[in-house]
Length: 502
Image 1: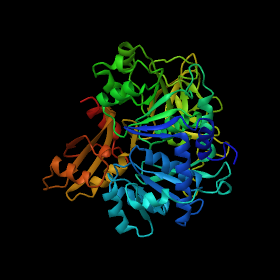
Image 2: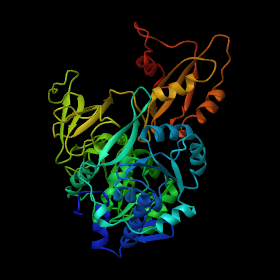
Image 3: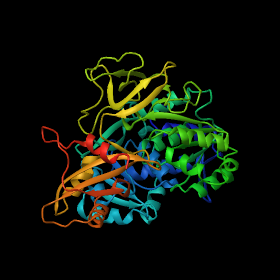
């Protein structure tokens, strides 16, 4: 199998080049590249022995862990399709994604085992494997997958990452091995400063179920054989201790992390080993950029991307200048243009919708591939930006009503549907409002039915049983009526004007 045809080929190459170098560090646990590669071989063989065939989907409901990394690359090596899921999802949310993806296997850990058991009762066609169980140990004791069974065409489907439109129904973005590898290759061309070095010790604290953590942090590190330090849950004090103790040199983070670190005593001393900081997922506030630089002497390189582009579109690493408030220039190999509502390119300096074309763009949404690039290869992102005089992009808005909470997409309609199911609710509107900690927060504005007394506490409890915690409204307002447009549509723009600065 030639390097580049399958994501797992990255792992094989690093195991051959530096077999005894530490690949993964998770607390006291250590694993070399040779050990990781051999475990992935056996696990891939075990998955095939279960009767799974190339193209079958395997859902992964795990926190950041060595087991996540092993499972992810074993799925790829066996020619299966990974379906990473947020371990904070409820059983109802997981069941929807399992049904839509047609997943034949769900991998859980002790923290998600209860959700897995509940889902198993509803979807009998999907097997469940707990990484802390004997069944996982049995998979790891399987005969290794033969090399002849590993090869896949470069356009083979590697992953379904579910995202949702304004309808609230999740959609699986189809990412091929080629698209994921292309984004890694483009990032590896950036050398001033280098996006990654073989000598790096990379912090994996971004959730691995998210494409940013999975491909930009983990995938890039595996591509060069850098050591990965895995943290499951972000805690500012504990993560800084780990950075210092392990000598972390490369940090891929999100704005909320840098904000929390900026408020933590000793951040400058803890980050003495760090050579590169990057940020993505949501816009990095300029005050956070400046505060972190003042405290540590380190500038944060900011980037922009999305699930559908595997994910990086642009970054200030392209120019090598960390410019506050900018997400930089497009990666080499990607075409980006800014267009108006009619699809025509805007004048220099004007804001327009970001359109992307290139080898890392997804192939469309599962299963039919609808909603992908147009006939000329362009994908309309729904995000609005302008380019400054130096060619660096600045994000200004989003056409879609997606709310970004700590970099994770939260879709208003999904929350509205959940709240509408509560007896006594006449109407509800969900909007995003600015939040100093998470970037944006979820605000639900609820109109009760006449002669019904509805409390915020009832709505909170109701949402907690139907939505992951990060989707649940942080603020709930109960009002007598919502503003509407002449056509009867809720005027969300007016709601943001009223509530956005409160």
